[in-house]
Image (cartoon, rainbow, N blue to C red; front, side):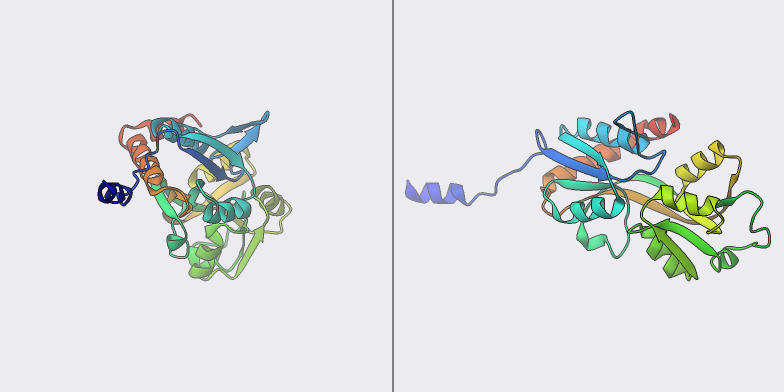
Length: 233
């Protein structure tokens, strides 16, 4: 009888996602995510809420500074950050689910400026704004950008552009489209790269939970729900 009990205790415990609680973190980066009337808004927020429902997760969503979001997702149990570029430097720091998006990174500028620039190589000699901790800091450095200006958040970056302290700001495709559509004083200059953006979860998040998040996100991409949600914005 004792032998049977010991053998049973040695069997692996199966952890399922049902009922699990996960904290999802992101930054203020419209139209993906922003705060309005005390509520988190944006298509990335809607996607995460739908993922949590399909994966049967209890969850919270918090919009915070990107540096804080990615730091917490790297070390805290049952914590994930989105929408996260899957870079070589980040690869081993997280468990990955997704992608949530496949889209380009663009340079935007004040309308009518930088008329002498006709190539990405020329643009990279100019001052380009981004945010502290964003993967575009490394991307721009890898591309050989001469002047990368990293502010604490997108709002401060855009204020620098408006004041003429930057030549360009680098943004994801949806943000670039939204900002230039809303402000006639801004325009898209050129595409820099095309990348995938994922949900990145800490290694202390149960692997079965990450697998369910991955499966749920994959189903959203496959059945067209992801495209429909993005189209609302």
